[in-house]
Image 1 (tube, rainbow, N blue to C red):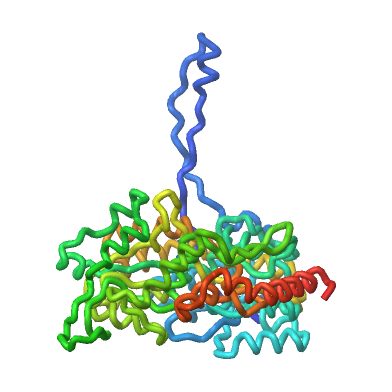
Image 2: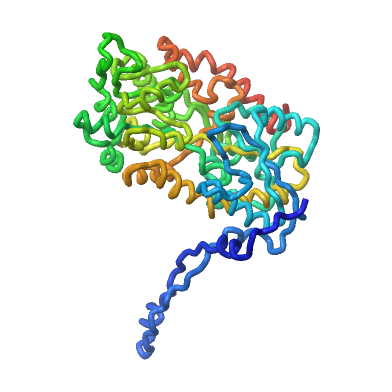
Length: 480
């Protein structure tokens, strides 16, 4: 295919302007060693431009190759892979600029294929041995992705050429979580991560003010935002607003939750169900701390100050109506722009004050097909697009979109930055061959069945866990 023609030289020059300050050279030591020397005038720092594409060999030319990214189709979640034109919308236009620069730099064209059956189509294409139908898959989260490993559908990122997974535009927590021994089948970069979100707690500032309560920001920044402190706000918040003598969705609550966001407490207390290192896989299902966490979570469904629903995200509706102080939230931030009241942004609380904040993060997961024909071309293009996303899209999302159009006060923006810095990934959420840990299944089990306890439940699933993870390990090592 022909390379897309740049719209103007002026636009190209504008795209390349992104400068950072360089450091001044000092000569203090040299002057002290030579008493007869005359101190030179202070060196004026020179402005230097950070080169996002320093690792791309000059003259790289892929002959107009069309790089195809297949992703989920959704009216809300947009990964901004290949915008067709400038629209004035900040994320769209940042991604468009990124692609113009990438396409000119290495002579490619970027296209996205949006399909509700994108995962099954990807697998069918790989089974058929096709090498250039899809170059990259961007996953919706959550989902069951262990089958991509066991079915031999995806390529090991360690074998891709032309990219540097240690670069700042790759999420290092995701690299660590998805590093299975000597292999890594999934990655997260700024190409797919900026519009993906961590789990967080929102609070209704108007309702909190009307109840005479202080906003929790100070306790967050002081490291004192704990579960106990949050529940101090929640306690006695219930009010029978419609006067019908029965708790329902039209009443006022301290917190609104469903099983997924209740399970979020377990993850955000730092208790990830499993991990993988050089020695293999490890499960984290039972400890005194986990028993304590489960007790706290199981108290929510029967707490009169909690609106607890098992029907999707119905708890969102209670919060959106202005009838809850807090809610657990993990959806697209664009939806928050429609809230008619003022709201604030918080991390999930710590279990204990001595803990650090754990910001459990999902989404942005991507993979390349095992059938790819040119590992250098694929890796180089991903590198260019990921670096370009760091250059254009990340700041557009954080500063102009979330901080400028969604969040409504400086404290929320500072919390958001804190949470971005501390974001961690969890392997079990998307890669679970057993079907017992993936998504929120382990922790949510305890709030959908209050008779379940960690000791008996972990024992009941341990056999299938060991069997399925051991099978996946052997398949990865070529023994399965």
